[in-house]
Length: 239
Length: 239
DNA sequence: CGATGGGTTGAGCACGATCAATGTAGGTGG
DNA sequence: CCACCTACATTGATCGTGCTCAACCCATCG
Image: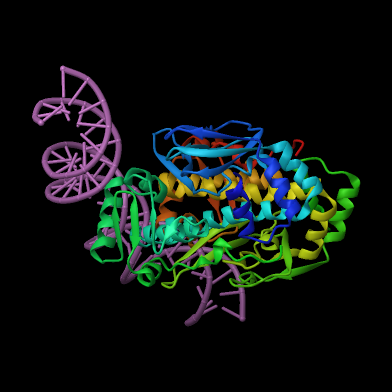
């Protein structure tokens, strides 16, 4: 039930049996969340961190003029707000993009882990640091990649992240985001997202009907995006 | 000599004397770095983390076509690559924007801290998490703020960050970045950065000669940027 | 002095935004 | 079963922010 939770950290380094047990105990309860509901609100001071078991979630900020920017996409196995344990007050909200099931981990349990399980603590730190690394890649995409390159880069990232949690079949995956949500993720208008996707289809790099994305030409997609997977730290090693 | 190092963490929570001593001992040596030199290179696997004592540094990525995106600006008191302790291989480089003096903290010492000083470990985690929070604000600026708003937001952020380490006098500070570097930070062209700055001057929101930035109308600058300082976590509290 | 590293200005252009309409598939109620 | 509704995808036309290219200016320094 907290299998995804454990699998996530095992991506970074091997866990001992006792570490796995500690993690099992840390998840106090599960909840089902409806599509579009907010998991956390801006300004909250959560006393629990949220771990995503199934479904997709997004962190975002909204400006006065109504413009929204999604700053992170979360897939099953991700900590959605592990940082709230350290940073205390939320400067952004988190929304369920699809119906989700989540696990709650009390900050108290996380604190306990930092007091007694240094290795586990470091792996939680890795999770936060990889999050930041993804943010940096998004910054590069936003600032210096064209809309096409940016979109290609996001698709590369999602393929690898979803593959890491077993949610791909070959080079295809389910991406339950509307083009409007994609626009808010990429910093583009809905219309332009549509045109970029059509371009990728026309070039026979991908296929995309409904929620199903198929990468037809991975080398070329990676080439367009200038994608280097290093930032995802997907190799397990001693930490 | 590692006063800045300590001051930095004291922003997040109070430190005990023994914690201060541990930090003092963690900095093994200091180095002077010339302007424009790389502190860390992409692909490196550093065995020490770098702490900035004086000067400005920038993390950045360069694309094949030569475009560069700066993903973080570091001011005295910042850890430049604390995350390299957890993430192992650098997916970006770090450059000295001005001559810098840096302190080196061996990963071994950081590891030791995680094994024996949980509270200090959490504060190091806060530093990584705040870094990520800054990245998220930059994402919002890149994706959904105009060039003017984005620039204003960066100036607001820098004023507060520099004030936190005592590098402001009233509402002014030294910002030793060329307009080209600013462009690579904001994701804009040099020419457009120049025009945006002129706009801010014309509106009498700021003054900017050479390296000296003066915020003449803080409320208005903050208003333009829609700036909310929450993400900087500048209030000390138990963590 | 001339060279170098910024900062500033102007003209034209392009990428992506905006506005508005149309298409389409599923889902609901009469 | 069809009429309608809703959510989302698609298309076209026009507009504007910010880019590019190319000068030119100015201060500093050798």
